[in-house]
Length: 60
Image (cartoon, rainbow, N blue to C red; front, side, top):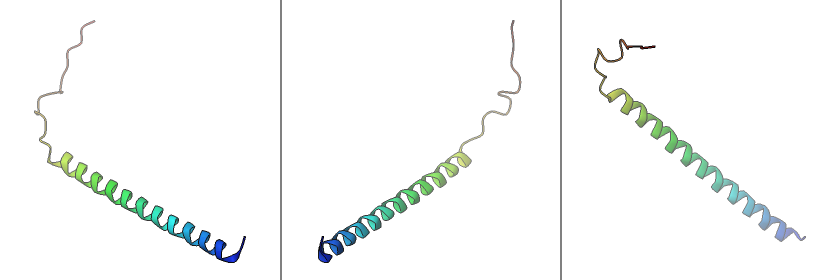
C-alpha cells in the first residue's frame, strides 16, 4: 500500500468518525429536548380528583 492510498483511507476514516459523532450529538440533543418537553407536559397536566383513589372496596 502506498502512502497516498493510506493517507486517503485515514482521511476518509476521520471524516466518517466526525460525521458519526455529529449524528450522535444531534440525537443526544433531541433526546434531551424531548425529555424536557415531557417533564413540562407532566407538570402542566391537571391533577386528578382529590377524592379518587383514597379508598377501595375489597370483596373476598
